Image (cartoon, rainbow, N blue to C red; front, top):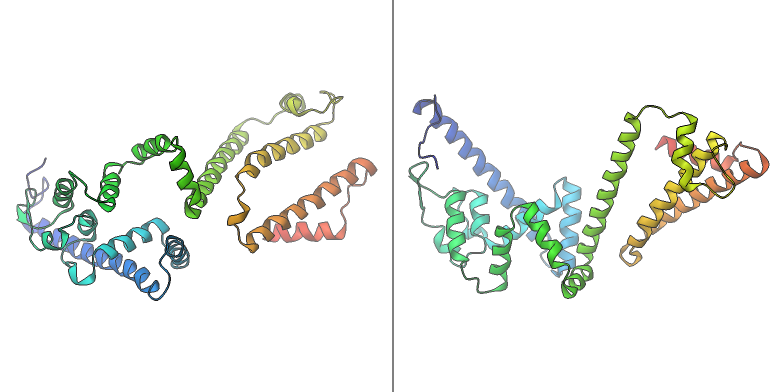
Length: 309
C-alpha cells in the first residue's frame, strides 16, 4: 500500500488545492445523494410502506426524475439507516454507506480514525470498510447477515455464481418468483439477453457478404414445407424464413408471459400488435391466393402510422 501523500512530480503547494477542491465536490455530491434518499422517505410519509408500495414509488420516481432505480433505492436505504441528525456533513456518503448496518455506527462516526495514506485523522472508505468487516465477524440479526452478504458479493461475477447456486433450492425459487419486482427484473433480464443475441445475429448478417440465391435457399432448407425445394423463388424462401424466425421468437417469448402482472395499457398494446400482425398475414394470404399484392386502405394507413413513429 502506498504511504506517500503526494503523487510523483507534484509539490505540496500544487497538490493540496486539488485535494481541497475534490473534498468540497465530494461533500456536495454526498449532500445530493442523501437529499435524494430523503426525497423518497418524504414521498412515503402517510402512505403504506409494504415492499410493493416502496418499490413502486422508487421505480416511478427514478424514471420521472431521470436516475437509475437501483441507485435511488440505495440512496433511500442508506438515508433510512442514517437519520439526518446522526449524519456527518464532513464525512462522505460512501463512508455512511459502509457503516450503514453496523450497530454502533452513530457512536463510531463521531471519532475520526487514523488514515495511514494521508497521515490524517479522518474517515475514508478504506477505514470504514475495516470497521464494518470487524463488526460483521459474527452477524446477530437478519440486517447484519444481509449487509455482510452484500459486502462479500460486491463483484457481479461472484453474485451471479451464488444466485445460480441458490435458485437450485425449491424454497428460494418459490420466494423469488412470488415477489412481483423479482419477476419483473427476471423478465427484463431475459428480454435484454435475447435482444443482445438478436442484435449480434443482425450485426453478423450485415457484415457478411451478400448471399446469392443458392446460399439463401440453403439457409432456408430447414424451414421448408414439404414439396418446396431449392428451385423455389427467392422471395418465397425469404418469406418462409421470415415466418420461421417469427415462430421461433414467439415460442421463446410466450412462455415468459405473466399476464397477472400487466396493467390494462400493457395488455392493450400487445393485443393491438396482434391485430396488426393478423392484417399483415391476411395481406400475405391474399397475395398468394389471388396474386394481388396491393394493400387495402386500413393496412396502408397502419403502415404509414408505423413508419411515422
